[in-house]
Length: 65
Figure (cartoon, helix red, strand yellow):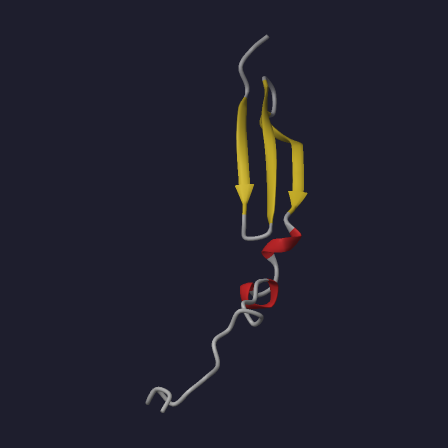
């Protein structure tokens, strides 16, 4: 068993892993090993997590009298 190189490609919503196969006549080639999308990466954070239930009432900052 020979060690092989991996190339990992990521962005904000997906990850892909490629194995580098060395061929004597054509040079290195890439073979897709694993790919998946992270669906939670798309969208705004504020739309996913909210603290509206525990929110304090909005006042003008003068305090209660």
